Length: 242
Ligand SMILES: C[S@@+](CC[C@H](N)C(=O)[O-])C[C@H]1O[C@@H](n2cnc3c(N)ncnc32)[C@H](O)[C@@H]1O
Image (cartoon, rainbow, N blue to C red; front, side):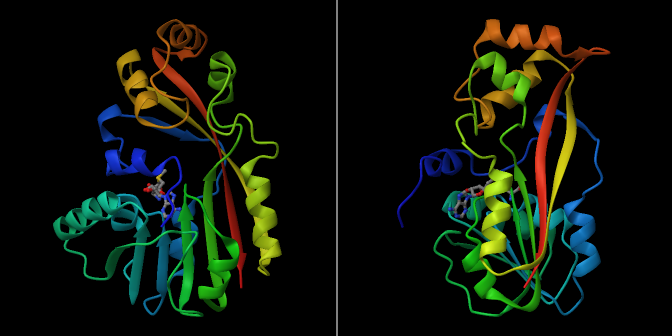
């Protein structure tokens, strides 16, 4: 397997959990991945979750069904996910290592494929879905945390010629999916203090590396609301059917 620049980063993190930063989130739009998922998954469904991280979201939010296969290219993430699974007591989830760009799953097997905040190949997903099966994508868009990126002069997606939401949307249509819908998701995250905010920015790949203190203070001065530091998030959701 050829690894991208992020592989070592995810291996070091080995989980995708942010409880330590005590983030309060407010949604300005109403597209909810888990609500849609729960409305479509039945007791008989076979579900595939791509780029599952430490399995935190699958274990907590996915309804019980015939089977959930949850995959990630990072063996460390999958090791964490298996520990989380054991602690949860759930029996319907299997975690395993797989590259989303080299999927080795059976053709026409899944009723639902979910990809939350990870890379996808729409053609490979299309192949593994049953006719009529559903695809749900939630991604982080180019303009996520844009004011912060403007102050820092760069960050994730800064140089993308086209927002990733549009690239994903077009790829899903090209792969042959029907009823393809792209929806913007706007949220505000609030942090209780500078330490939590800086810790979060140091952990996630929104900026490159740990943030510069002077620029961070400039952002905080402009974005402190009732004592909380506000971060404007911009994601997108895609629903589609084979
Ligand atoms: C931002 S985390 C999201 C984790 C989880 N889906 C969630 O929403 O909490 C992205 C995950 O995608 C995985 N990932 C990135 N590129 C991948 C690839 N090519 N194949 C499989 N997993 C990948 C990373 O290892 C990481 O666990």
